[in-house]
Image (cartoon, rainbow, N blue to C red; front, top):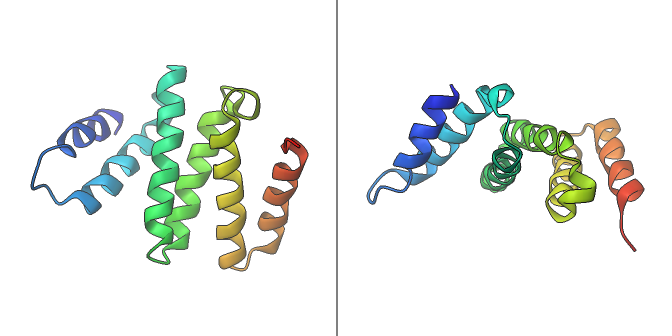
Length: 123
C-alpha cells in the first residue's frame, strides 16, 4: 500500500489528472502503509497530507473519512513528539478532530480532543 500511495503521489502532479480523487486515493494508500513509515520527516509530511485530506473531505461534509485522516495524522506526530516539535500542525490536527467529532455528535471524543488542546496550549 505504501508503494502504491507513493506512486499515486507522484502521479498527482501530472497535468490533466483528476486531482481531487487522486489526492484522496494516494493519501488513503499511504495511510494503509503508514506502519512502514520510519523516517521522521516522512511521518511529519504524512501528518500534513492527512490534515489537507481531512479539510477536503470536511468541505464536502464527509466527516467519517475526515476523522480517519485526522487520526492517522495525529498518530504520525505522536511518534515524533508532535506537541513539542510540530506544535502548529499538532494543534490543527487535534482541534480539527474535535470539530469533526462535534459534527458527528461524538461529544466524548470532542471533549477528549478539546482537553488535549487545552493541556498543550501555549499562552
